[in-house]
Length: 99
Figure 1 (tube, rainbow, N blue to C red):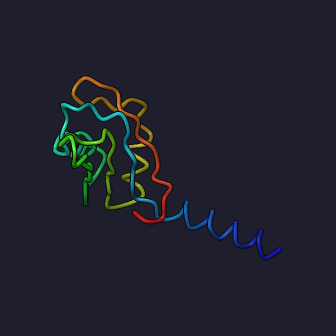
Figure 2 (tube, helix red, strand yellow):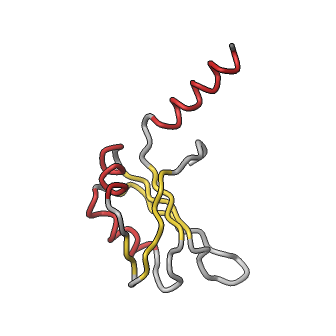
């Protein structure tokens, strides 16, 4: 019973108050400024992170968009296609609790 309650609490925490989108397949020609510009049409962007590979100097093709509210994130997720520099990127809800 306790394990079931714990799983329920984790599920609740992960679905309430979400404001972060995880973006994959970012073209190597795009920078965080292009990501920020595209996603700002859905709401205020608090933070846009695109990690770089220290060895190659190129970004890793993924990033995180931190919106100001859940509603803004929902607006972005309702959009079927996100095109950046002519390439369709994959945007999804960030599932990790560490963001």
